[in-house]
Image 1 (cartoon, helix red, strand yellow):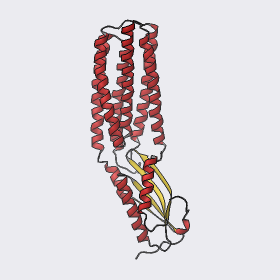
Image 2: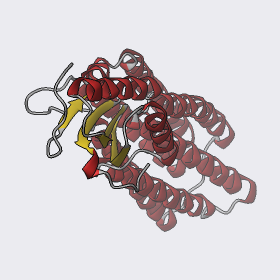
Image 3: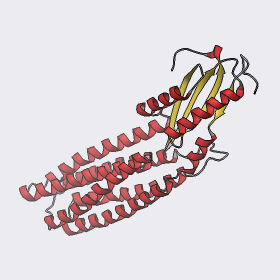
Image 4: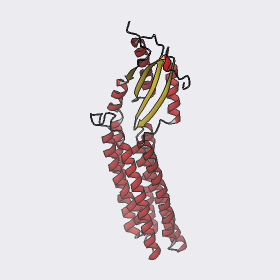
Length: 319
């Protein structure tokens, strides 16, 4: 039998299994393939939109094509971010490199804002010198094909990004949705110009689309900043953590001071475990092992740190 915990003593336990799972990232290869697919789709959409612009000479379709350049840059940044986040912890970064994805998401948000401003600039020029659009229906059909491709791929990115808890993939998908709205607004504007002959409607629709792009970019930046500042686990996930701890703590008196944060796919969980003063180190360590196993099963890739305390440290508050 191991020694008992002294009334003034404590010990800590860190889940090495969780850290190992975190660094291995079994889904990372698939995430990279998805990101590479995003780059291919973005290049294809850019080429299609450039054809639509060349056919029509429309300033609105030109600005839509220019906005797609941001998609290409974003897709490339996503690949770099996912590769960076996959690097295992090292001496300089003992908690890993998962936050590289949030930095990429910040860059995506900034690029969305830049796209919105560029559309506003093109709209301003169109207000100053409106002109007729050539072969509008052909150009609109070509542009619509690119838009449908973006709709399909953005849904894949957002669904897979949320499933794999990849901030970079989700941000890329949301940016593509912004491009979809941009494209739909441009198509509506071009159609109205053709049907009514009021050429100033083209830049007016572009202004509305630009404002939406600015709003969307602000949202991506705000979300990424919150995650960079060690945002706690979502309420649903936090509830699951509490439930697992309550179910698995066995003969422990209580747990308190639960803290969580997440970075990419990894959730970091820290809490204090209060045990009877006469419980041996071996017995308390067995409880820690059981808690760590239960938590990493419930949240694959979780990294768990448990601080063991004697019973006089009980707070009788937090479950």
